[in-house]
Image 1 (cartoon, rainbow, N blue to C red):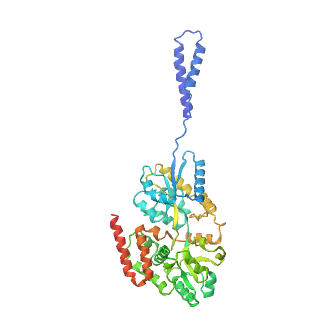
Image 2: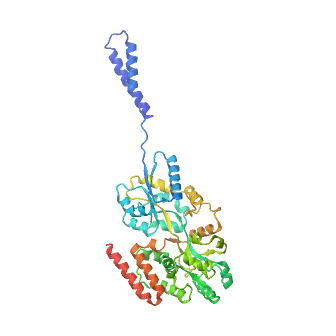
Image 3: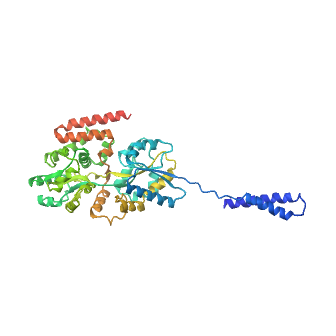
Length: 446
């Protein structure tokens, strides 16, 4: 409309000028002269349509494997078709290279607008440094609080504000063989810690190892600490401990180890866990020699397909029913950089990535478990539906010990867990050593 108005005004001005000019020349041929000049001027003054300003969104992704890459490219195409005035410029970086480069990305000016990343301490580390954009307004504007499960809302929140957009995860649970439970006379699911201790006695009585574990690379032992600490002291204390805000010599941490010792003293675990990696420790279950395994949902990738009919899982037993329920569910998602060139576009694109449409597609095309409660899971198999409900019913979602705490603390902590497994009598010394490392890290960060 503005361009048409300018064109009309320009023509009128030119006409006025030419009419005045015509009054100064002989009358003969005046109409033709005026028409010719007007035509030439109007042609020279043709209005060129100026395209609307385009505000690109820079998106850096670590989804480099073939299937995730194809999905990433697909959703970017969808967005660009719907938002030609705010297109996404998409860069895919190899996973390990991305992890090494992310600090450089976030401190650049401008930084990429949207990035893939991990929830938990790995996100909080950058939040503390002011490198992740506060997305609370976007969460509220898109009413994500109405459709995100409580545990994932808590996971996205830091000091009362929303910074992260969780989108996919996998659950942890105690996997077990129903046939062995029947053989030992153990009722499934085991719901309380006392029932777990009782089950250990019944399995041992019939010559079945209650629980297998492969701790050669330490991290499976960390799962036991995560769950025992959350069930003993609650998920908030656990996360505060992971953030180095609580002391490892706090009596509450010692109580966690004392509960762990009850399981060791009751001979609940396979002998010499450090002799097996996590996959090797599956064999005793398959052979009918062990009944249970605390492991992530990816266990089925290594479990024989023909044996999965005799495999099920249940939630880690409750120790104190008065405290909120925390679950380990390592979660991936997205965030916007604080130095983003286009924060408004970043917020809009994040809302799209967290939408029901995209999460439904991710479930159906990649098998990624949705964090939204309104995604249709009816076509998923019974185990997947059960796992989704297990996590969506939790009060808090933890990430796993080595994701929730700092890398140096995680290394020291997992060493301590294995020392404890070798000699439970050393609880006090182990906790003192862990506390010394926590204090050292706090001093180093000043």
